[in-house]
Length: 388
Image (cartoon, rainbow, N blue to C red):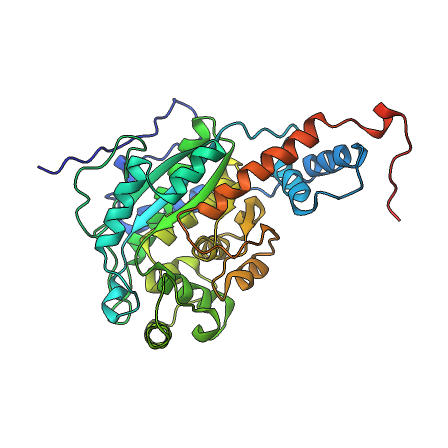
């Protein structure tokens, strides 16, 4: 018998996440769509008054104005997201959605789907790059099986696996749509639910990660549609394709888009036709960030593609996102420009798993220390800087 540790985040009555996987997983597309519409109806823009209060506090601190750059701006944005200038980031989470993609049949990857299962298992044992970095950053890791195709075997107990499996991988999108619209909505709702449960458990910021062989192909397809760019402009070699492999990847994305004609104004249509379960789950987390007023950190290119899909579902979600870094993938900066986000880190990273997102956490902690504890000009009795 396969032994797989399954995990529930827990919920207190009357708290944020009213929806439960066990309740809605078997609902019809109509019922799921109505639930998603109801959840998105709770979105409100970030609190501008809280942002102004945080900006005022920074303006009084004894340092040059705006001298912490994007990090300073991020703390101000977090104040708006949470509705309070008393910013706290004591409890951090990294949520990693794991899923396989049927398009790997087209030779768009260097490795097979068994790698998805192996790395997912490593997450549960705390042995992956993201887990080791999260440990140093003081973040708890939550791996989610939302569509892994291969059997995982016995998983670990360091970070027990959360079961939100839609099915064992998507379909090959040059033969049929990657998933049904119902499945796309179900995956998005799973992400919203998990964001709410993390909020219930007291987490104050969420980093996003993913694992799935073939997901730079699906992300490039989503990016091509949402940005209105040729696939060649947004597609890279992923985890190490040859030049000929890259051309095959571009041709495959073009064929999928030409076949299904995803509607860029409909994020669910794009996800269902050329996306992946991991992307849809992440899009749900980004929407959940806006619903439950908790900041969500974009990792790299794949995470940014999911963020863009979330904005295509409801643009208010964009106000609750922070960009960690610029991915080394060709469309890394294009995606952030599309989302209107400034990255804090430019380090040429492209590992995925949420590694770039958790790398932002220590920088935010240091910036918050200045915000909370630095003396003001009035405290040290010298004239403050003035905008010129």
